[in-house]
Image (cartoon, rainbow, N blue to C red; front, side, top):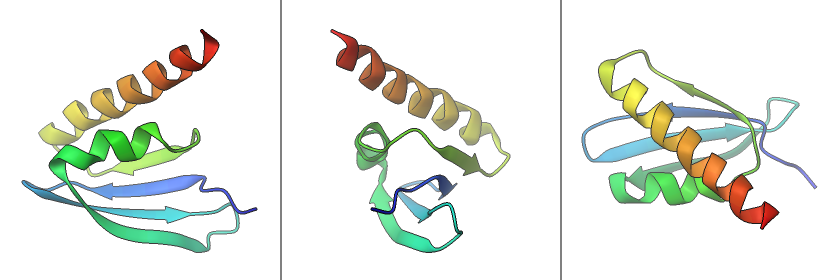
Length: 78
């Protein structure tokens, strides 16, 4: 089964574009997410590399995505 290993995230004001690829660089998905659905989307993915554009908002989203994924891992241990 193919598993996503790299994700590109284009952040905007209300809609975010997400592109995922497997280890061979083949596209697995390209979808649009609402601001409210971003953290849920990332919390349900396996650990992978996430690339964001360099801007002030990217720092916020990088922290939030890392926190959501960390919480998921901690929850599995209990």
